[in-house]
Image 1 (cartoon, helix red, strand yellow):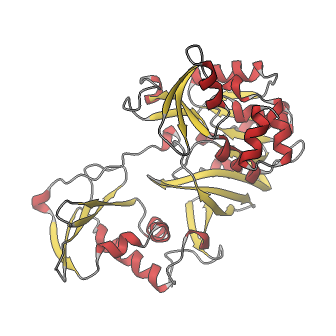
Image 2 (cartoon, rainbow, N blue to C red):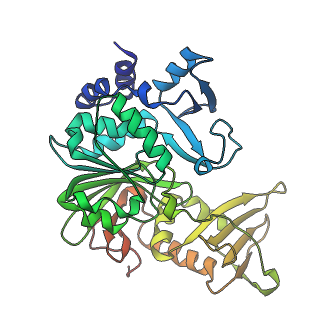
Image 3 (tube, rainbow, N blue to C red):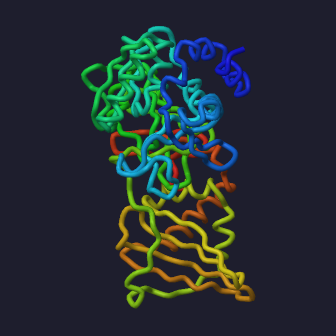
Length: 376
């Protein structure tokens, strides 16, 4: 078997996609230099000219390969040279997305996030390149993708623009394939998809909390569930600063709670989803200290000078200090979400679903009519 077929077999990629893999050779889409990031193990630089065998092995491994940092201002080979802003996804997650998308013969597909053009070519091989429209926000990346796709023998429609807007002049679509994470599903994608059509996107309202999401479109929205964790770069137009920062400390309100912040942290991803629904914009993470103490740090996404809170646990104490600043009392909001989560039997991610509406995303528990945060 070829390297591509070996990789497909090792990843359990379905038979229909294995035929497509041969039609879109992955090495055509990987640049001569990049940073390979395997699913297991440390990142390492690859260089086709200096180390061709290592480069080819990386191409046909389950590794994402970073091709751009800081929107083109950074060195993609340097881990410390800023935020990764473009890559070719690891085959395992890429084909997991495509299998969830499940395009049929002759389906019209909108792809958001062209990148190197690899999945664009794969989709072109699956449904015909005349049925594929792909949108890329970065003109230089889009042009390189055009060259790569043409070298593989395909000619889909490549549009330069903000993926939030989709591509309305070529709708309706049967499938929407999104290769960048979204903090909120743009309703434009729903409007451009025919009823019964499918949208597959990495939904990531919080840092470190990405969920692969499959939505089915109806006349009034799109409904679906989550299909495991995933980590993708956010759409550029949805990026927001995610940083906990203490400021205006002299104006902060200090109280106490008997709720152990460790218990809140250990509640896991189900509670995080409840907080997303009940307290929009609230993010939190943990800090451990050498003396054994622990803090749960809360802040409002995208507002570095906005509300923040901290709940501090120390050994031997029965009550825990809570410090809150701003027009929102974030710890109180998180306590309310925790209470809801407990009353609903501590649900995990598998019990939640997502509805995309004109007014924004809504989370539900067990069934779409049971919206989170509206009682219960």
